[in-house]
Image 1 (tube, rainbow, N blue to C red):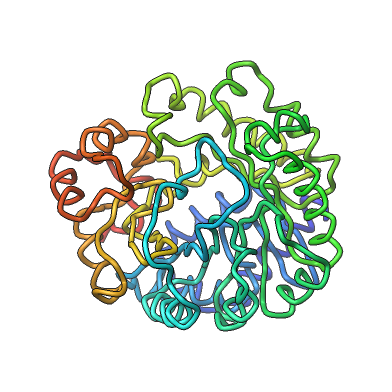
Image 2 (cartoon, rainbow, N blue to C red; image 1 turned 90 degrees about the horizontal axis):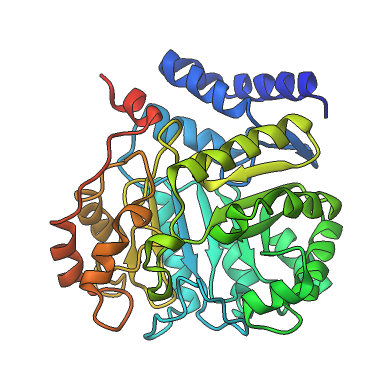
Length: 397
């Protein structure tokens, strides 16, 4: 839809949640400016800003207003759960492949989901490994309910038209298909899997056919940034006729990336922010860059504060990119673990792992995640950056 109609639909949808007028004017003004950087996408009557937020006319977005902006719950707003560690691909930057243990079963995952929702989670991401390899994924998604946005991160492996239709019927709202390069040979090399490129393209077509919000989840290497190749990649993604390009850069989560040459600079982050704004103005595709969302000028990094990650074995981490654990949900409730973690994780204005990978390197003993005892010792040495703009407004009395 055109920019005027998009803004009008956004205002209309927000005002339909009448309680939003009780939110502090400074926060509402912040949200209006932030959301205005994106184009509202209408999919079956649901209005999407981007896939890191629920549709603005959904029950999940109403929970965001009521529980987080008004009631100011101490719990997380976003959570990710790994449904399995199994994956046929072998990405160099994968944040999960070195984790191990006893897999959570379906009943444990479903109980965990309900506990997270009770804590305040209104956006839930399912990841892996390859989550489609979990034979109970439809049952798991169906258990979430219609008051929590559900996003699936997948390589497309194991997808069929029937499974996609069942996922949509169960409540799947968004899907991000992994695609890291516009050249087939290069994408397959990055993924360590022959056929990864064609698998991803097929999955995109299948998900588009069932009517969910479809994005590509792209991990940009620093080399791609330095060679000015990002726009070439974006033009390729536009040709796929998807709703969104969900961009992040490689994170120094794994040993191979614990060096300064692999970590994005602030100047490079801002160049991607400018690129996002440029393409969003053209209205051909929504560009949703994680470094824009978590930049100090917006919401900042909320790892361990408003974000929580539970791996396939029940270990609780601040986010998918932080290879440390504060406990296992089999030993203690996720609420208790999160509360202990949040005491050590104030919201801040820049990515935690980008700033602290040297400490991860220091406390690493050959196995991920770093155990709780060493995690607590490591946290004594962490120095957090100032609050983001949103957090300054949110916490100002």
